[in-house]
Image (cartoon, rainbow, N blue to C red; front, side):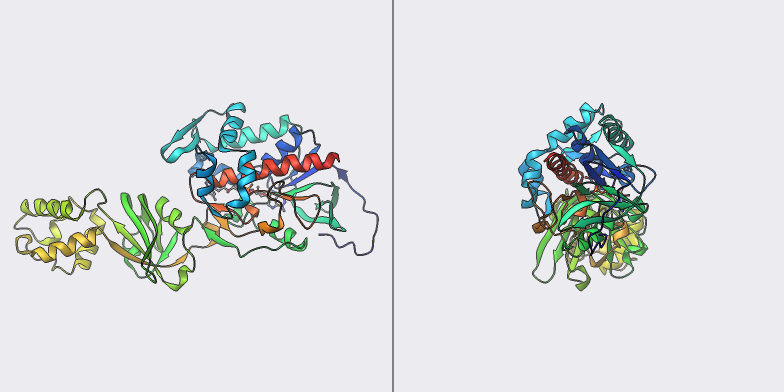
Length: 427
Ligand SMILES: Cc1cc2nc3c(=O)[nH]c(=O)nc-3n(C[C@H](O)[C@H](O)[C@H](O)COP(=O)(O)OP(=O)(O)OC[C@H]3O[C@@H](n4cnc5c(N)ncnc54)[C@H](O)[C@@H]3O)c2cc1C
């Protein structure tokens, strides 16, 4: 915020009815919406190109939304779901699909109702949004916004490249703090704080997990498909997350889809209270797995235990499972006892790994925390503290699980902000 303590005349280099700060997902959507509502819009983006983060979403395929209804969408929002009721009612997941289909990007729905472009190219989504901005007459300026101009609790514009740009409606869409190389380096939090807003603690979410000990490092690079994955809180014995799917071991711990999803359900992880439990054979119950092991053993009666598990487990895991089982690696399988087999079954269905941390926010898909939503109107996205100042997207204290819900948060909040900013600029 420029500190114009004594009132002086501000000279503006350029004027617009709406200024949008940040040309990511929320910024482009807010700009298109405001321009389509009749406003003269300037969109500032500090990168050379719009939508840098959007381009890498969904591993370059962009899981653009989820084909679910309002209630299911809200149940997938991890933080401040009630705040999003008006936004998702105004611009639903079906509206997102219509928007892109109308922009000429055909979509398809995959497992878990995840919606992707048929081309599997996130770039098609970026281009569609950029073209929509251009067609709607949005003026795109590739400059970093350095601050907001606020006087008497009213926004008057922004400062970019040392020039003042005037507008009575400014929408801040600068994103969160994760993957800062894409441009989301937390500028919006600083703008909001200077405008008097509260910014809640910023933490990583949908992020790889750090594990205790060397087990994960020994298994580094091993990817497991179709496993059962659970996280238990050892303080109260509760299962805080459970799913089936894919994960990977790394030098520091665990990553992959089920691990990232689990991370959104964990807090105070550093206390070491969480343990991840991997079920290597979720399709088999204990009895079925025991029968399977017996059958494998019967085809290898004279083999050492360590040489009997090739058909059951990935090669890289065998040493580790044998070590954890407490059964002598050189014991002949025909002399393994029922109790020893029972222990082996329990182990294969429940390999425990103690979790001790999140990886850094640089590696997080999403930021937990942000501008406190009780200081923002859920119906318009306007600040309750500074008139004409709006926020949309990840800069707000909103986050969801994986499945296209985070982009939908950006689309819905940006649509509300864009149209309300435009309407108020006509008053
Ligand atoms: C690897 C990865 C994969 C993901 N995959 C998915 C997925 O498949 N589906 C899903 O729903 N979500 C996904 N997400 C999350 C999703 O990308 C974000 O929720 C979304 O991008 C947030 O949109 P935003 O517009 O608020 O912020 P951003 O997209 O981060 O945009 C913010 C923009 O503001 C610009 N900016 C910042 N400060 C300034 C300034 N001072 N002046 C001018 N410009 C500025 C930045 O350069 C940036 O372009 C993924 C995230 C990551 C990191």
